[in-house]
Length: 157
Image (cartoon, rainbow, N blue to C red; front, side, top):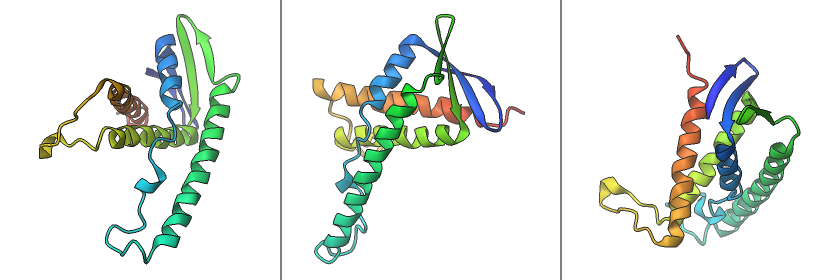
């Protein structure tokens, strides 16, 4: 994926057919972070905040459900991907770019959680089984997409 045009209101990327297929496959994973992964407090007594934690999880589940619905609608928009040569022009408003970065981050972090929260620096390498390879790929691909989209907002001077 390559940025081909940027204005204050939108970014236009060049995306190959394969990259588009990969993007759609990866986005199908959303939402991936389990709602129980988000904690109101890591230090408070779990029984004391149990009802509040349940409310948080319900609110997050509803928000992610709505985000998924909006994500699928956005990807299906008629002019979102316009054929250009052997690929597509992929247009995103700056607002949608930020929103998609958040969705990619959910998939990236959720993949990391699915992989057992590996931490190479602290001696906890990823122990990959065949069924984990998809999540490992998703984690790495989301990172690449996030880098590509974030670089679109760097000052070119």
